[in-house]
Image (cartoon, rainbow, N blue to C red; front, top):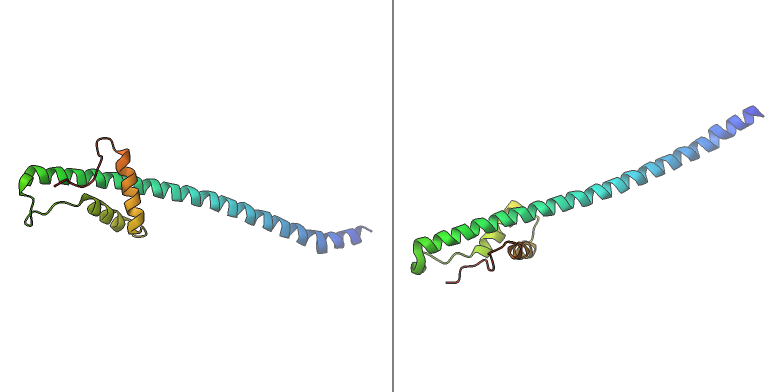
Length: 124
C-alpha cells in the first residue's frame, strides 16, 4: 500500500503541484512587473515635467534677454523668439518618443504651474 501511494504521489501529485507552483510564481512575477512598470512610467513622466519646467525657465530668460538687448528693434534681423516652439522642440529632442502634440500639452500644463508665467511667447 505504501508503494502505491508513493507511485501515485510521484506520478500525479508532484507534477500537478509543480505546475501550480509555476503558475502562481508566473502570476506573482507578472503582478510585480506591472507594478514596477507603472512606477517607471510615473518617474519618467515626472522627469519629463521637470525637464519641461527647466526648458520653460530657460526660454523665459532668453526672451527677457532678447527684450533687454533689442527691445523695439525686434525685426527681420532680430526675429521675435518663439519660446513655445523652442521648448517643445527641446523637449522632443531630449525625449524622442514624445509627439509634438504631447510635448505641447506638457509645456502648456507646466506653464500654468509656474508662478509669474502666464504666457510663453513674447508679445511683440
